[in-house]
Amino acid sequence: MESEVIVLGSGIIGLTSAVVLAEGGRRVTVWAREPAEETTSAVAGGLWWPYRIEPEHRVADWSVRSFEVYAEQAERAAVTGVRMRTGLQLGADVDGLGPWRRALPEVRPAEPAELPGEYTAGVRATVPIVDTATHLAHLRDRLAAAGGEIERRAAGSLAEAGRSAPYVVNCTGLGARELVPDESVRPVQGQLVVVANPGVTEWVVSAYKDATATLYALPQPYGLVLGGTAVEDAWGTDPDPAAAAGIVARCARIVPEVADAEVLAHRVGLRPARPAVRLEAELLPGGARCVHNYGHGGAGVTVAWGCAEEAAELLEAA
Image (cartoon, rainbow, N blue to C red; front, side):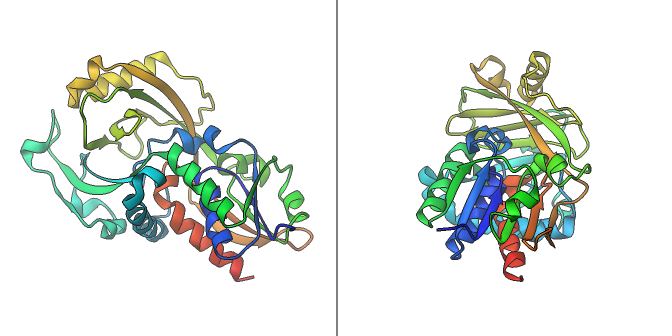
């Protein structure tokens, strides 16, 4: 059966969009330049929390909707990779969280005794944390069950995809820089270290919007994810030993147990940053309708379901 929709990209944005469309009755094929396990999504720490993504008023709705979906999926954590976990956002206050805070069923200012080191403020909240490897596999399974397919293929142009189906959903992330082309899409390099978890059960984050060096410790089933970095316009994906040492040292200041933890893995990913997420439709040469869904910065996990559902609505508006 010929495809009705070509979804470009196999990261969390692309696969979530494909699942929403396929489960809504569309005949969907994903064109994947690389398999999901080699995308930036597979490297992500997986915490639901808007970070390096604009515009705020739209991000709020996308984030809230995604939170709702993840909360349901957390009831089947072993299959979906989603768990609800309480943690601490250091240096934040409840009133400054933005309109997306309405998603949080449990949020309060941290007590002084809960704040480590030099921190004088913080927010405690319960949010989804996603094991992205498990979640991407879950999305692939849902897509297949709904009749969708994944083809290992890189689009040479949007027009090429438009010649293969009447609808295209562009979820190419950083690849949109050349494919569209859209020079406003830029990489923000992130490095993290995975260590054997010494018993940490709650997440902790201190990541200011424009900081190059961030700090987070995220408990996942496969280990404790320590971060991180946020280096703009850096394209390299090889781990930097000095950056890794800095990550562990920063985390050890608030979680001393990680100083001697066994290092299990080093990871580097490139966040697809843009001044604002591009989620809109246009007609391609030849008449195919293209819905763009890219530029999610450091919050692809956070907004994936909200953006996917809006992309489906834009496609239905044709």
